Length: 257
Ligand code: HXC
Image (cartoon, rainbow, N blue to C red; front, side, top):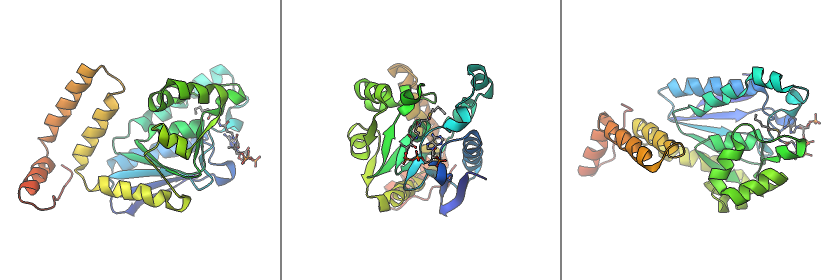
């Protein structure tokens, strides 16, 4: 890997992907995104991994798609390059992904953080969709995901002005799960990952899928989908173990099947 650092077992059950183009504030060039995609696909298949953390460094989660790589492209170049197929594949990751964000999460960087399932932010985190300032608009889901996350009024303001949202504001508007001091953001993400890693991975996967479905469907369809996944957990040994352990007043031992 050229632009990311992967630690498959950062802790038992927890994998860490660190974006690693520090001089360019982790600007997301296509190779970097392909590396993230390939890594997520491999981690999804790795039975030792239950939760994935995606992070950058203190200065930047990612300051956006690589402007230098896009600047001279025509619309047809962009169409044929089809970089968003990589993003679509990232979105299909079944295991939970926690973004640990410090510093800039802008443009594609904000969109990548929002594609994760939860966001832990450092006090220095800044979220924004500043594409409007360089004559374009968000292309990897910003207009959709930011609006769903923080509501129309604030999303419209950020997307039309390019203003940034501080970590505190991002927390207030529900974009992030928690804000902690800079030296704590990775620890906090790991603590969250650790808690989830103890659950039945089958149930975690089915729950993630059902929550995400709520963005795609009407309530009736979403409820039917949830019910199907709920019933499906009863096909797992983990459900039997979880309920039996509760009855026997002991800690469950989830096996992942
Ligand atoms: C390429 C970038 C970059 C980017 C920063 N750099 N952001 N290179 N693409 N998105 C590079 C700079 O060119 C510079 O390289 C180095 O990183 C440090 O950046 P500075 O600007 O010198 O740092 P600073 O003054 O601290 O300003 C930080 C910043 C600013 C406010 C984050 O860099 C900035 O505005 N970046 C662009 C943010 C943006 O517009 N993002 C949206 C991109 S479009 P050199 O070589 O000069 O040292 C997008 C569309 C998504 O994301 C579509 C889907 C993929």
